[in-house]
Image 1 (tube, rainbow, N blue to C red):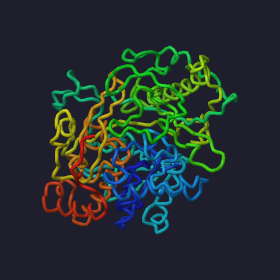
Image 2: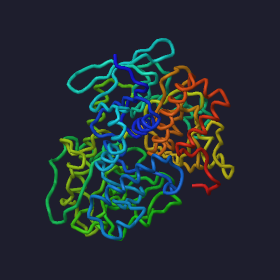
Image 3: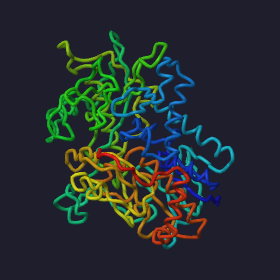
Image 4: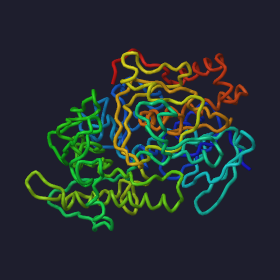
Length: 533
């Protein structure tokens, strides 16, 4: 049986950050990815980074900044940018108004590969693509090894001193018998103002979304075949929605009032981003520039806009894909794909136009963006999965501005990073609509990464000790990266000091020394005094 220092399961942002950190400290590491592309949210899921308003100067780890700059450098090196775009230190290739760095998935995948390349060349990091952990061997409170199912039906048993779960839904937790929670807790359990007033609902999780990319060719015909479920989605009207889901009317998550958007607006530009609320012109929600990943105005030669469709109209909330039978998961993912294709077909054939006509037949599915047979994202954008039962659980009252006010978020003595985002809960599989709450800039407590019992399996993504409510703020790109990076450095520290994570967390001297290490690795532990978001 081959043995590593660390096994990292999951090739998303947390997994990549963990592998890079492990390589930096000389740990022989196996990174196991279900897909050929690494990067998860940024790549296989097609979601440009959701980040806070200060991201260009603080509030992210040094290695996350290196990734962002590597993406920008790729465009400057290989694309025919205008002189103005090339000189822009804050280049935003898509000029999306929801993101300060909206870009193509393949560019992020290539940037990640380049960052990992030196560690792969040295033999410190081994990457197995098109593979997943299918079984975990446990003795007592320790993981002894894992079985990796690789392409072609090959199963390989490997062992490591530490195993990190960086999967999108916390897949290793049930395999290893790690205590975890899913879905929405009750107020009786967490005391959170916006938790459920009744019993907990473990299957009530945030909607997931199957992304796709579009360009517009005015005067051309690119209408796809009518999707099998088009009639279903065309008439579907959720109880809490202001009209049919396939419509430009939607809910404003902050006010819960109806909001009518539109597809195009030539005057819309990313510089109109309203950092105070994280959204653009609220009386004119422009979908095309919302998650646009290429803005033709940046390029000196002919280039068309490309827009990524991860919109409220293709959020899928009719069933969970966590802790359900495989056939149920496949059915829900298939239905979500049909919803996305139905949205595209509706946009091409029935969407109202300003001139009084209907449909935009020139909308063209850019199936090359993901390279999949159906033109859709490689995997769904998953906002919520399993979460460990941790030594510290982050709760709404720790960071919500309505609770904390000018005092700011709760200061954690065991901070291992910082983050910032609204509590942004999308409609859930339990039938609940948006929960959208202002937060204070917050910290990531080490205790949220430390399981209550198991000694050598650590969460390295969205599966840390948050609640259903606070997951809505901690699930974003830079925080997932921060968690993965810290998980690897925690494993390294425990190996060097012959400690369990639980023992390190309980020892104030060891904890302080570990925090000093994190700072040396470019991880910020506290926010400066800053205005509320």
